[in-house]
Structures are given as structure tokens and as C-alpha cells.
Length: 137
Image (cartoon, rainbow, N blue to C red; front, side):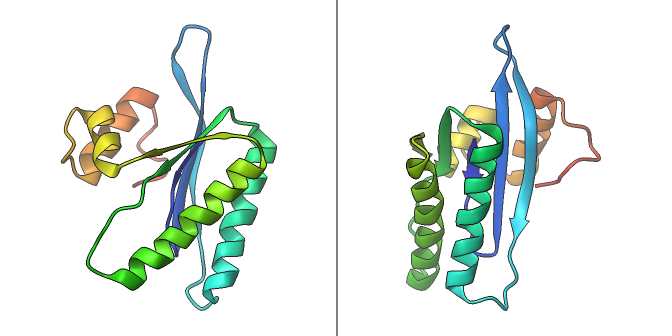
């Protein structure tokens, strides 16, 4: 299970590895939260969604984007809370948690740690055989 945390939009995906070692996409979507909700209601929505996904798919592990350091301290704190809530839900379910920097994820998928979202999406479509009509980045 992989999570791209956010305070208004959280991306997630679940994959399975078949007997030949090939990944299969089980589900990929986003959780959009109403900006009019207060921060605690949005954090609760993240917790509920992650808990529901864990219950439904019973993943073996949990990967999440590692915190990054920007100039806006308030944004960093809000994102850190979103990450913490998602991680807490995974840990409560007994999952191993791994954090990956955005650069590391981009490097692993495209071979370029500085790839843009379009490049990452195109490579994921190719690797996971995701049709063009499915969720965009």
C-alpha cells in the first residue's frame, strides 16, 4: 500500500505481486477533502480512509512519502500531521512502514530523480498497464 499524503488531497494505491513477480494494480485513487472542513475533520478523514483500505485489502506493508522541508513552516506542519495520521493507522494495523523521498520514488520509477509528474505517470502507465482513461496524476 502506498500513500501520497496531503491536507486536501491524499493519493493512494494498492498493488499485489503475482507468482511471476509482476506487479498488479488493485486500486488507485485519491481522497479529496473539503477545504471548508477544519484540519481535525480532514485528519480524521485520512485516518478513516487508510483504516478502511487496510481492512479491505490487508496489505503486507505501507509506504509513504517522507517529509520534505520547504519554506512554509505552517504547510510543513499540516503535511506532517497528515503523514502522522496515516502512519498511525498503518502501525495500529501492525504494518511495516517505509518512508521514501519524492526524489527516490521518481528515481525508482523513471530512472531520473528529477522527473516531473507527467514522466512519472507515463512510466507508471507503462509498467502497470494502466489505461489512459484511468486516474490521472
